[in-house]
Image (cartoon, rainbow, N blue to C red; front, side, top):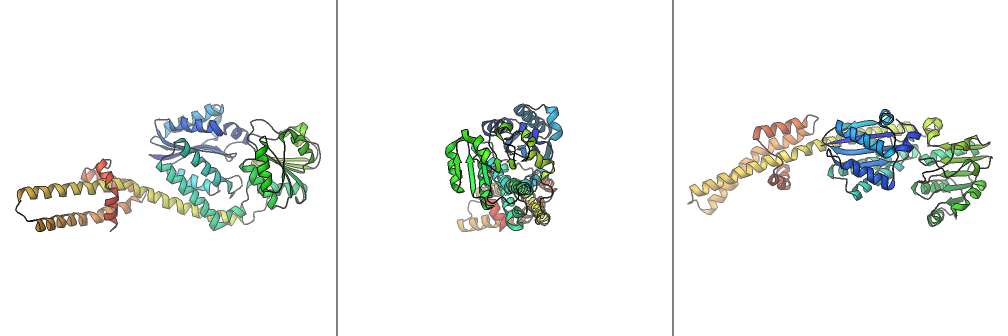
Length: 434
């Protein structure tokens, strides 16, 4: 079984297409199960954010699963396959591991180094766990990816060098409006991105923050965390008229802020929703600046100060390369363990059979001598097998590791899937490590 990734992101697809392919809620769970139902797929997980939709799967076939996943993405999004395919990327085995680690470390984000992706990967992991589509292979891989992401942020400070989309958006707001301290800010929505936006505004020195959300109770809770106030969703137009800076990120499927709700004046709107919350026609209003994911993708963030990002990115890439090599080495070594277990199990069976034959042929051997003979025979076998089994585990860590395990199976006619051999794995590993 191998790891496969099929997806599209801001690097390969326009935001308009990402809007159509993006899935969430019940639709995301349904797509997850549809992928996992494939007879070639053992495990599945989906990372779906405003910047990417990626299907991770443990598969026993390559081309068949790529075709199936592509077809499912087309069906769930309504985008014809022929329009979808040019924007898809596929990673397999080693490259799939490297891609996930890079994503978790923030190297593949629209704003390199942003830390929100870690939470999004963790959310994808939890959904797959809750839906029962995750198994040991993907679970271990994703858990390791999360550790790589945490290590990257802790050791390089890339999260400070590469601010989140919200942070970059506020820096763009300062270009348009000047210092944002003292301005009135409006946050539309009360989800995780909206909470991040409100907190970022507060840290930037904005003290007049209003939160509007369809569920008023959630708006109240968020407003309280930043010392702001909540307003009813029905009063959105009035709040827009009083705001200087607007950050919108709801889960709505239709436009929330229309052009006729915005008064032409000096005003900045940051639309972080997918699909759009703010009608693009707002850009035509005098004095109004609208920045959304599409404009960021098309170069709006160019020129935002590097703040040491280049050096941090290089350091993170080195960490990712190191962690990928370590993961692959450990994973290859683990593949040979059932073969080693089968070899030692077979040897143990032979020893026991021969000791039994000796006891039946020479029954007069007294107990103490019989026990000493048995221990001696077992020690001889253990010593003969110790070096080759340790060595094959070491060799298995190389890229050609599977060939060594295969040779061992052929030489000794082993079946590593024998249940009895699997049950003895812990005992055998302890013997090998001595």
